[in-house]
Image 1: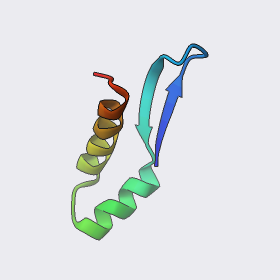
Image 2: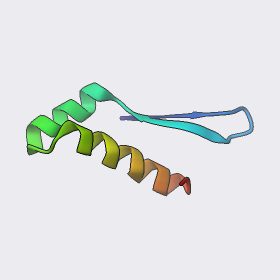
Image 3: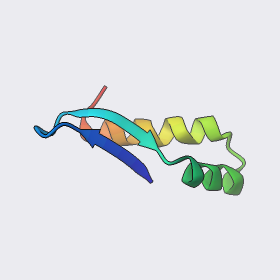
Image 4: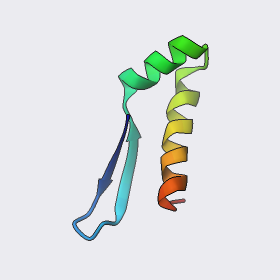
Length: 51
């Protein structure tokens, strides 16, 4: 799960992956949790057209 925070106008100002979900993925795949968090947040930013 990734939370996306935005203004009333729809401008995104924060993208944050849920730690517990990322920890579960990290445990299941053997991927470091930082990499899981970074990739999840990056993927959502890409989909939203954010930098």
